[in-house]
Amino acid sequence: MGEKTEAQKRAHRKYMEKFVEVKVRMTPERRSAVQAHAETQGESTTGFINRAIVNQIAADNGVQIGAVAAQEWQQAALPPETVEAAQRAAEATGEATQDFIRRAVDTQAQRDANALRLGINPSNGDKLDKEV
Picture (cartoon, rainbow, N blue to C red):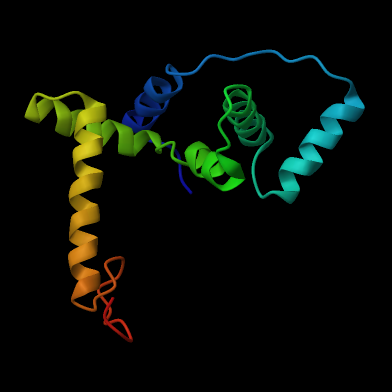
């Protein structure tokens, strides 16, 4: 992949501004164990730590969200260029970015459901073997 454009760099910086870094102290052995476990789960160390935090907060509050829901939550972060496009579109419609994204996802989910009912795979337009 080539050099990032200035727009991509700006979008990435803007995206990263939403986050803070937290320093966590642990022994080298524990760090190795955390990294190894994250790798076996197919996620980054940061992703695993965030998922563990989400699960623990939920458990402390008497809620069991499960590993799949926590992993899906973690993976829901959008690439910077997608966030930038959503911000531009939200500005054009005069709504908050999160409201625009919510509306866009709801609209696309409805379109996908309609396509599935017609026996069309919404991700590629191919005909499904059977209608849903």
